[in-house]
Amino acid sequence: MAWPWPHLVACMLAACALTGCSHDPHPQVVVYAAQDQVYSEPILQEFEKRTGIRVRAVYDSEAVKTVGLANRLLAEKNHPQADLFWGNEELRTRQLAVQGVFRETNGVATFGYRTRRIVINTNRLALADAPRSLTELTNPVWRGKVALGYPLFGTTATHFLALRQHWGAGPWEAWCRALQANEALVVDGNSVVVKFVGRGEAWIGLTDSDDVAAGQREGLPIVALPTGPDTLFIPNTVGVIRGGPHPAEAGRLLEYLQSPEVLTRLVEVNALEGARTERGTGLAVDWDALLGELEAGTQTLRGLFLR
Image 1 (tube, rainbow, N blue to C red):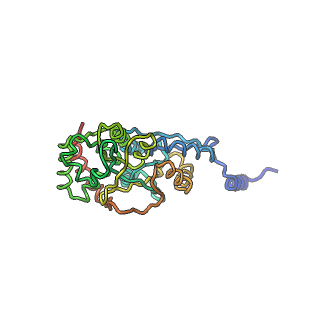
Image 2: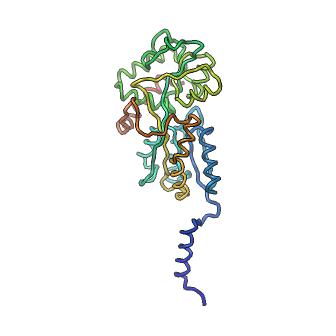
Image 3: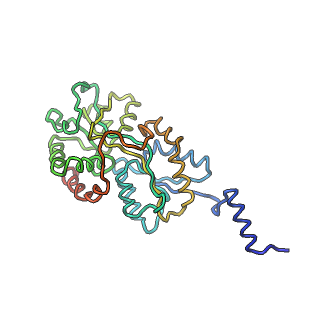
């Protein structure tokens, strides 16, 4: 005697709940990753190995960093292609959240931190003589000796815009103009800053703590210095895309990326400085206000540093 269809369907659903079965025989998740590929790829591969969920990852480039992936997500907003965005800074993630790119409930999380740093070449500059604040970088003694990432992208852009809020638009613009007039070397990203300083093409640079650690592993003669009250703390961020094609798999990856195991691993390889989420002494950013003034700050940076 055949079972009634409602009874059969109920039994099948119960079995799936117990075994974790999926309608998709080949589950996958699509990740747009702004976290450096050298750090993020092994973690995504481990997730794939443990869960059987295939990870299709799209990485950014050093030159445009998070901005390129953020623009892609905005362009795809009405027909999402990605399931999850793994960012390595906060501004673009918040910008995407305001635009409704992420799901409403438990859509965005932050974890761990790294910081913006001054980096110096210890063969060119004694620690005692090194600048200890960002305002010192406009001193004529450092003319042509300071390197920074293109401040329209990545954490350099976020740091500059946060400084605009902290100092006020007038003093900030004056500092930017003085930095440009002091012949600062504008290069393609923070890792390139470290290479320039490590080779002695620049004596001083503005970069991120993880890039300094990577340069030190390569044996470059460099050391990182704090920027005091102008320090920007930079968390990793992760956001689940609203209407993404694989929401269940995205949820599992979201949970995995926030696990103590992943945080420990990222700290061990110096992708993060620590696992805590609270800010230390540094810039306290009003993100809503910053996003409201984003276009004005960006226009100033574009006018001063356009290459």
